[in-house]
Every structure is written in structure tokens, then in C-alpha cells.
Amino acid sequence: MNQENLNQVYTRPSMSRRYEVWFFKLQLADGSGAWWFRYLTTNIGRPDGGGCSSIGTKPLQVWATWFPREGKPQSFIQGFSLDGLQLTNRGEAFRLEHGLNLITHDGCTGCIQVDGHNLDWNLRYHSTSGFSMSDVGWIGFSRTPHTDAIFDGEINFDGRKFTGTPLGYGLQGHNCGFRHRNLWSWAHAFSINEDGSHTTFEALEYEIGLGFYFRKGLLWHEGRLYSMKKFSKEVRERGSMHWSFTCSDPKDKVAVNALFDGSGENLQKIPYTKTDCSLTFEVSNNSLAQAQITIHLPGRDEIQMNANAGAVLEMVGGQN
Image (tube, rainbow, N blue to C red; front, side):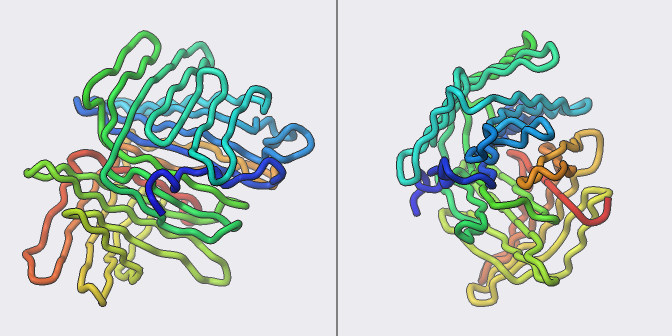
């Protein structure tokens, strides 16, 4: 599957219970902070207009969260009805548009007003690789169409302008599912190496049920993708936002030791809505997380990845 196909819409207009989200996170090149944006559709096939009208969740939402280097995050969510939504069909080149809010495979714009705050953005992004982390058909998937994204453009927030070429570094993701998992941990780290090449490491775990878990780590390094499914020495502490583990692939004799630290004032907790419209649940996200990554490749000295282009850690469920 090529990078553009990883962004194609999965949800059909008739699906009454499903979320699908396109998101991106960028750490600003000037080091002043990070931005997290989401374009989310929920239950667009429900006969009552989609979303979860019983608890006030709109079928289309645009999210923007500002993570300043110093200070607490600020999150803004604006909901929209299905009227005016233009969404491509499965198999077509991806495009989601509603008024001034637009996202395609390589660019996006946004314009929201929430509680007296005004935000707008116009961004372009490109990368060298994208991949699917988990894909279980109608049940759900987690994809990263851009794992080492470079962003150009501008963001305007209450009169403050962020602009640059590059503006920042990060990733663009695409997730979809019949329901959200009761427990998950997800992290991504991005390093710009001395020779100008990029290294990224992404890891995901979630509960499957009956005591079983999905776990996978993906390393993009020197133009090659390494997939690791064997996890050991795992320590997960949602309360302190720490996740450490070793993941490996005995066949390729590759291993990664990872430590993600999402503690501190940059931690943001946001309510997500369950697709059955029963209630909301809390998601912990720090898009200015710290990461220590050690890479072990056969016949090579160990490589220390410093995540100088940013790291993010997200957790749901488990210890609060």
C-alpha cells in the first residue's frame, strides 16, 4: 500500500457506528512548542444526523491543541453538522472538506472559533515513508501515511503567527474503528540525524480482549523499515505518563530499547466519545514528551536516537 492509499476514506455513508480520524502532530522548528490537529468523523450514518446527539457530539469535529514549551496546553474543539461535508469515497484520492476546513494527503487548512479564541492554519507536508501499524478490516486500523513529516506554512492563534519553511517536524496519522479500545499506549519519536537523514520510531499497544494484547514497534532508519512484535521489560504507568520497553525481531536481529516520559505541565487530558454514545472517556496526551531510544542493529554499534524533532506519548486506560 503506497502512502496516498493509507489516507483513503474507509467509512461508508451508511455506517452508523464508526469513528475515523486524520491527525497530525508537529513540533515547531524554533522549539517554542508543538501543535496537534485532528479532523474527526463519528457515526455519520446514524439516522439522527450522525455523531452522538444525545451527549452533544457532532458528526464532524476539528480539533486544535497548542502545547507551549512553557505553560499548560490549550485545546479547542469545534463541531459541525453533516451539511456541507464533502468526503471522498473509499478507493478515491483522499479529500475531506467542510467550509474552510480541508485536509488532503499532503496539505490541510483549518479555521475554528471556540470560546472567543480564533485559530486558522494553512499547511503543506511531505515525508519519505508511511506504513500501516495495525489493520483489522472493519474492526479498525492504525496507519501512519507520513512518519517523518516536514511541515511548511503558517498557523494563526489569537493574533500570534507561527510561520516558517520548515515550520516544524512530526507525523500525520489515520485511525479508524468500530469502537475505541479500553486500553492503549501509543508513542512516536522523530530524529534528524547529522547527515540530514531522518529516523523515526513508533510503537502501539492495545487490548484485544480475554487478556490478549496487540503490540508492535516500527523503526524507520537509513531508508529501511524494521518491524518488531516481541516486547519485553515493559513498564507502563499512566498516572505518571511513563512507558518503557524493549521490542525486537529475532529474525532480523534488531532491537529497540525505548523510554517515553510524558509527565509534566505539557500533559493534556481530553474527553473522547464512545461510538455507542454511552459516555466519554479520558485520553492523556503529551505532544512535547521526552524520549530515550537505543537502537541495536546486527554488526553495528548501538545508536542513540535523541528525538530532536519531537516525541509524543498517548495513553488510555489502566492506572490513572
